Length: 499
Image (cartoon, rainbow, N blue to C red; front, side, top):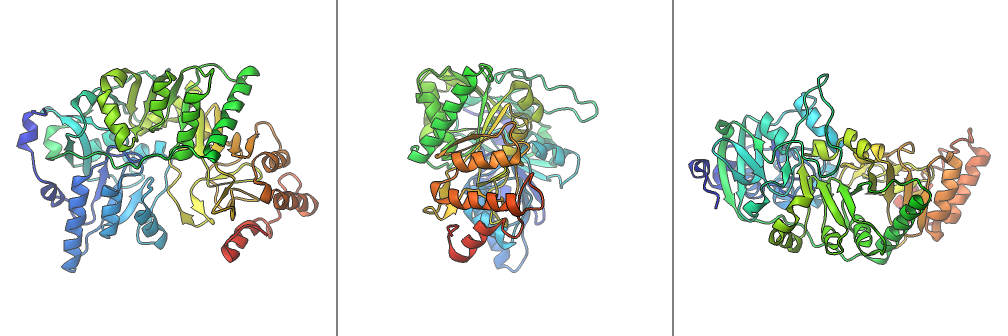
């Protein structure tokens, strides 16, 4: 039982908490991809916004989170037309539509940069913080729930703090978090994380209790969907990656016990499932931003050494199991603030193998992670740039086609560059894997076509490359600008990239 006197003293309803938030405020919340986010107060705030709008008055807030959040936060607020601006990452369909229609401003940030942007005033500091916790003490120790995210920074920067005390999550989860914030430059010391399991901070966020203005009791799980079982394409991608890693180990280029980072989604989940089921794989360590359901396949196969993460993004069934077995697994998990889980210094030091998904890849190894046809925002760059630029090996993966084969993931030139050719080392589709390290642009292009492109598009890609080698003003990166977006123009005009 959560029995600290501050809980009863500052207890209020979600509606009472929502009434404290003013039009035009900047609100910072807990939550990361999407785990550990507030649920009851945002729903009440959306209802309040609808009432205010019905009375003919304006009510919109700026919303800062750690990364994406559940529908109870992003979806409810955007459908109530209560958002004016959002950072730094999202994955909600209704919010995405509002961003692309121009209703909501969106600032797409590297997740490791957000804390510094906030602390040093590059963007607006939040005035109110709303965080989900599993406990709070009278002296102001806040024990967070399923995600680290940006909570510590928002709590420290905000004028006032609202807490959703979520009794769905067991008190035994206290101690999972490791909260550490670096000193400001130029006096910033090295971050003493040398192993994914290292703890360098404290298991709570400390705040002046006077800043806590309300505590709302809830009993709600994170609303994450069930992950699909790996399909044939995802399983093939996973197989190519594991074959590549085994080859690198035989060649003496892959030190033992390098930790893994895996991005969000079903393809990333499938890779970890394959690591759990492939014979001869040693137990792995993870230094990542998100842990998904596949973690249990690693545990069941005795393939998980430890996992450092920013969020436990688990389906309802997996959330239940994690809590049921919390005392068995607690010592193997560390939940960090995203400033630490995604910090370039640590990523470079521990030698991470990073695996992230791409929307499209061009012939010369540039990756688009965020936009359709160069204009339509999907979710955001998230942490892929943090890991790609600093990893020991950076891998991008995607099925070779989409929309029944009408879209090729391999194109002459990406319409938006998130990860450039200087950072992307390996690309892989269900067709095969291309190791781009040490190759000139033209050799990269030939390898990507033969290894990764779908057979339906290889001829078109070869023709573009050959035309460029004959007609481009430079043969180093032989783009012909009037033809570089032929694939995309055909898609926009005919609904297919096929000729």
